[in-house]
Image (tube, rainbow, N blue to C red):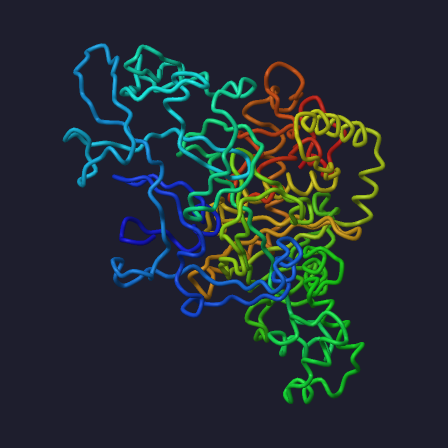
Length: 595
C-alpha cells in the first residue's frame, strides 16, 4: 500500500486484500485501488505458466493475458509509485462525541469528508470512518445515503444527522439514524431487502477511481466493512507440470510472444516475415504450427480442464523413492513402491491404488476479480463459469496479479474398481439421493445453478479433510497450511494434499514423508471420524429439520470434518462422514470399513 499507511504480504494481495478489498487501518479506512495504480509492469516480476495463461484467456476473454507478482516491500514506503495504491473509503465519518451518559445511550454525529478540517477533525474532535456501507453482489460499493435513509424516499433535509446507540452490544436493532428535524429510522430496517430501503445500486467502483460507474440493476444491500462477506477473491490456480509436448509445440512456446496473435494461416504468413520465425518453424508445416498454436491458446491441454492434465502427470510419475536428482525444478514426483507403504493385507488400504510423493511442486495462483456477499464457486474441475458476474480489478485488465508457491505434497489414488463397487451398493445410492435432495433444496433460492458433484467427489473431499487433520499432527505444518486438490477425472479418483509458500525455494520435507505412513494416517483419520463430539446431532443431521439450513453438509460439522477455508477448495461444502466411515444411524454407506 502506498504512503506507508500499511503493508501486505504478496500472497495476501492475491487471496484476501486484492483490488476492491476494504481495509480497516488503525486511524483510517481504505479500499485497495485497481491495477492502474500499481507500478509499471516493467518493474514487476513476470510469472510464466502457459497452462494457467490459457485458462485465464478462456475465463476472462483477454487475448494475451500476462501475470505479474505484486511489488515487494519498497525500501522507502514514502516514495511514490513503489507500492500498491489505496483510496480513502468510506467518505462518511462518526464524530467521537462523549456525552458521558452512564446508561451508555450515546449519540454521535454523522459527518461527510468535506466537513472535516485539514487535520481530519470535526469541531476539534476526532472522527472514525463509519463501519456501514452499501454494496451489491457484483462488487459495487458506495456510501450510504444517510439522509435519504433517515427521511425516506423523496425527502431531503440539510440538518445534522446523528447515530444513536441505545445499548452496548452494537447490534443493528440498537442503532438509530436520527436527523435534528425529528425524523429517525432504525438501522436494522436497512437489512429488509424486499423493501429496497437503500434503493438500487448506482454501480459505483471507487477502487477504480473517478468516472468508472457502470449500469447495475441490483438492489443495494447493507454491508459492514469488516465483515467476512465483504470480499471474495476469484483465484485461478494450476500446478506447473513437466512439458510433454512435441517438437512443434516446443518451438511455438519459444516464439509465443510473436505467435500469440495468430488465428489463421494469413496471420501466420505475416508473422513468418520475421527471419527468426521462419528459421525456427522451417521444419514444420503450417497446419502443424496452427494446431499447436490453437492447443496452447486453450491452455495447452486441448479441451480438457486443467485438473485432467495435472492428474495425467501425477499418474505418470515413475516408481521410486525420489532420491534421484530432479531434472525439473518445478515438478519432481515418484510413485512409492507398494511395499514401502502397504503393510500386509490391510483392509483400510485395500481401496487405495497407489501413493505418489511430490518432492517438488510449483503452484501459480492468479487473481481475476471478486464478488461481495456470496462467493462464486468453482466446479469440481477447479474452474469458474465463463459467465460469472465478477467485479473487475482494472478498468481494462490486460494482466493479472499472480504469485507462485513452491512446496511438497502427497497424492493418494483410489482404486477404480473399489469406487465402482462402492457406488453400486444400495445404502450408498440412498445416501446420495438424500444429499442430492438437499443440494436441490439449496439451489431453489439461487440465481446461478451448480451441478451436484456426485458421490466420489464428496467421498474424496471428506477424506481429504480428515487426512489433513491427521497429517498435521506429525508433518510439522499446521492444518491451515495444508491445502487440497480433489481429482474426479476420466474415471480416476484421487486427492492431493500439499503445502507451499511464495517466499521459499525449499520445503521442510515433513509432509512428503508422510506418504510412507499413509495406512497409519488412514486408521487415525477414520477412527476420529467414527464419532463426532456433536453426535448424534451431527451424524443424523438433516438440512430440512429445524432451522439448521446446512443443505450442503451431511454428517459434517466444525467438530469433525470442517477445516480452515484457506485449505479447502470448495469452501467447506459437500462433506459427509457417512460416505467415508460408518456413523451413527448410517452404518452401511461407508467406503472404508471400521478401523
